[in-house]
Image 1 (tube, rainbow, N blue to C red):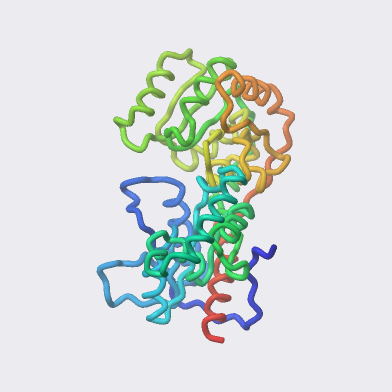
Image 2 (image 1 turned 90 degrees about the vertical axis):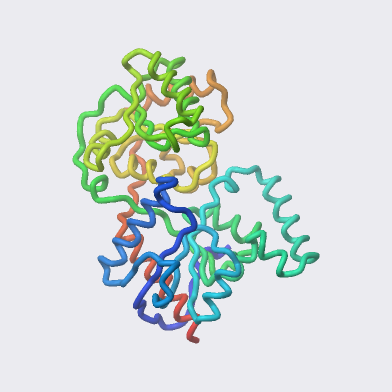
Length: 350
């Protein structure tokens, strides 16, 4: 199945891009914020004018809108009415973790609804955005396949483009690895941060957790903080590190652990890979699609004892594990993104 979305037309130069997203950064800092900020910076670095879409400014104009998330169908239709193509970068992390049987059932429901419901009602579900958008960008081949088979995204519009990482990680200097594992990310039930801590206590493996909760009074985060506080010195938590400090932490860690219930192409996992840190990931399609045999895997629904066994085995074997695949830089990723923009504009003007 073609996921490259290639076009045959001559490329048309990109002049100006507007970037949009449906959630304020200050409400939920995370990987999508890093992705947007790094994309904007890298576009400007390669000579493409790019700025956030200002919803209140009716004097803004653009060659193309890049929407991070699933743009509402009416949004895309209004942009098209002004002659502006819309590219969507979609995260299908939760959907991508579902069993194949559930995905098949979901595809059947959507297919039936499209035959029975009027287009005005279908627009409310958001499915039609996958057909209306001029290009859909996904970070893994598995998510691209879901976009096509479940939501009906045309193969010629579907593109697989991984995330990049900052130079602080790619250019970090190798160091002597210490005795601890590193777990980086938001402290939430989705990331299973508490479950990793509980398994680490059983396995007696030291883990350094780095990350913040969604909000300080989150019951799950409070339970995690209390659990870590009661553990020996081998388990610790830090809310924040600078890029340089985090790169050094990846370089000095024995291994990296991320056992999320669901995930897209994790930026933290890519950062660890850029620093040559062995990775232990939840056994989900996104991880296999990128890391293949160069990662260790744990069943995503494993209990504490089983997770502890996997964690201990990974800890013991980490020094002899091969290095994960080296990720791309943000400028390299954004040059590919610029090519997609050019293809979309070429298709629009043919």
